[in-house]
Amino acid sequence: MTIARRPDAVQLHPIAEESLDVLIIGAGISGIGAAYYLQKELPQKSFAIVEPRGALGGTWDLFRYPGSRSDSDLYTFGYEFKPWKSDKAIANAQSILNYLQDTARPYGVDRKIRYHHKVLNASWSSEGARWTVKIERADSGVRKIVSCRWNFCASGYCDYEDGFSPRFEGAETFRGTIVHPQKWPEGLDYAGRNVVIIGSGATAVTLAPAMAETAAHVALLQRTHSCVMSVPSQDRLANFLKRMLSEERAHALIRRKNAARQYGFWKFCRTFPRTARRLIRAATRKQLPAGYPVDIHQPTVRPLGSASLRRPGRRPLQGAAGGAGLHRHQQDRPFRGRWRTARLGSDAAGPAPRMSAMASLFLNALPSVASGPRLDS
Image (cartoon, rainbow, N blue to C red):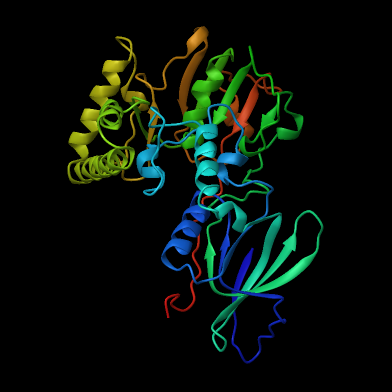
């Protein structure tokens, strides 16, 4: 999708086939939330949600790789108006998708979604104070023009059609399997195989433990250390409050409690980075076997200075069930996309060893919100 802003003197706008107050692009967690508040606060305004795929849910319907889940608690990640009912505060993708579906149906948001509608471009006219949006039906190829006062882009930060994949030198002669998490093949069998996961972000942190349950060996290849902490998947205080209070009141208290805790931890790490690093290292060391080399895997960046991740469970990314090994490997120099960096544990020349590789890579672009005039005017 492209958004253009050109001088009105030279801009030609085609005649719109439909006129709306608001057009929401994307039927994921942000688009559904925006639609709920729009019809609640401004019920007189007309709007529609356009979604290029055939289902709602966005990320949580798209990604099918093993272990896909949130890295934030659902009391703060979810909606304020829709209580999270599961005992697990950190949930898997299917549970989050069910939550979104259960939110869209009762509030009528699902009836506002136009599936298989892909936005090709949008242009703004200051003279008319409106957006002109060109849309194509992904299932039929038919195009139409829609105009709106507000263009709310809730499309996320991933390229849903083709996630970012750098070129790996020698990939064409690699005898293993190269898979991108965004296009995970159904029924992919990696049991008993050696796996390299490239990257150490949220996708890699969720993917590695899941694959290590059946894979022979899992290696996590990273360029830069990130802060990863193990937290319980269930919030015992939250579950206690849900038993003692009404659903709505408990959800409101838990949401505020978790938001305050996250802010307090962030503030502590930013104010006392060295102390925070020592505490994180001590907590990690306590969870690992005696003598495990913790220091070589500790990040040099400030905690919460670049990226910090949380994963459910009481053990860090060190071992795996079933005896499968799970190890992290550090790439000290900037990663330049050479395939030799994935040939861990082998200095011999020749073809790459037989292993399956997982390029855990994303296109990191911030979502944009394109606005027009005040809606309540």
